[in-house]
Length: 466
Image (cartoon, rainbow, N blue to C red; front, side, top):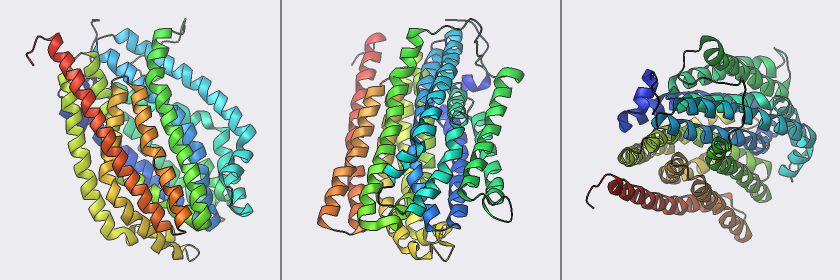
């Protein structure tokens, strides 16, 4: 084990697992609240452009979810690998792993940028099959600026994960909040005629500029101020197959997981278009924006669990893994029960952010119905999401991927069968809900079996009687 000075964040990461989970989850959740509020406000401003624009956001979302998915996948893989090395006391190896993750994301972002520029319009037309031509044009206007600056989003995604891997969740929070605030300020000026009047393209450009500011700040912390734990070392850089394997065994399945979510969204849009048209897609995509806000405490806990359990795994403190996991399950399920209850009561008022304009006001009833049905499955979603984070922390990327495939693809045949027997969107919403509940319970049971196995290994290693 190397001798090195620990930052306060690293000491917290390696200390009491319950305190470490809260120290990670709270800043992450606050940052996600800012990001989600930004997304909702973005949608609110876009809603003022009409139903075509609102539907376009829903159609474009799965495509850029793939971009974010690749970035987050490499970020999760890097965070798991870095935190494991920090827990094992391998400081130089942790630095080298961080450097590898930056090089890998630069390569990935270059490939994605070229692919999006070449294939953007065909992709959007395929994903928007059945949508009006005016909607497709809005999709192109919105997606093109972000395609040109794909590297900005991907680099910030990985750098945020690296910050969290060393326990610096607060700094990650600061830059994400800043990006959200900048975007919210720029949006109306870039979108409407009293400013630049760029419409959907203006919304996208505002997002690019806000994210670029975050990227510059993180670069300043790591390369100029140099007051963080990890140090990037690119002089004489050579790829290490062991490090690449360690990043990819979690990162590649995690990227595929995010792509799966995008693919599922694409197919769900196609299913919904058959019975609900553009209005149905607008309801589905808009409500999921709200659901993403409601699930922020859950996502904060699940994201924070990865470095905490990975560090404990590197230190071979399997008892801390169980403590962190069971604590995460308890607080995530409880938080989602409370949030779901409040949301079910105030859903009509919450959803007015999408229906304040006379052209979209008629959607409120449909939005409210789906939201209240969704409140039934949100507590169960906590079980599945936290379990998948545990698998990632332990380097079990394939298990996390299989869990995600099962949880997400189960809804497709169920919902497709629903439209075969009825043209009622309500039946689709209930099919989605039942699928989420059943799959989450099965994945959670699997995760506790894994915990039981690693605890048995811990007892054998330490000579503890069964």
